Length: 155
Image (cartoon, rainbow, N blue to C red; front, top):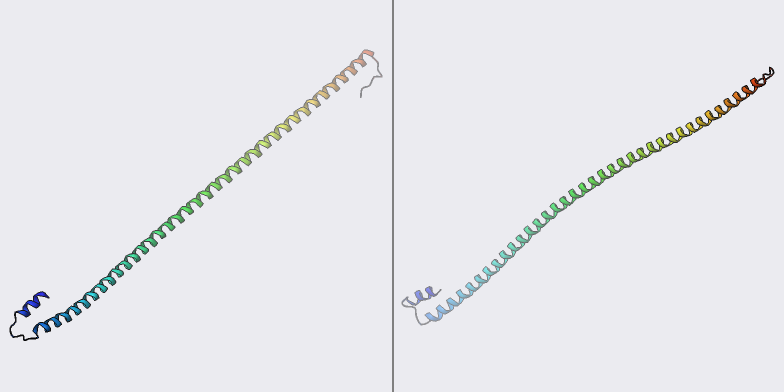
């Protein structure tokens, strides 16, 4: 603007009102320059706002993507925990069934042992009773022979 003013002042035959006209011209140009400057500032502000909104939108999209990834990771962890729990439950049931079978087999062995013991006692008692009866019979036979009686009958 200064260069334009110097060039104007160097021109001959401007007349009396030349300085006033120059000042009015410069003033009008100053107003236009101010308007352009303000418009440029508003456009710059709008561009900055647009860039900030774009940055915020990208940040929100990135946060949403990270959140989605975390959600998927948590779902995978939950599925793995559930699978492990189901496997542990299955193994526990197998162990319980095996322990139940072992206890039943042990009970059966104990019952069989007791029955065999009872049968042995009964057999011993029977053998003892038979031995006693045999001994009485032999005693009776011996008495019969001692008396040598013919009318001695053992039944």
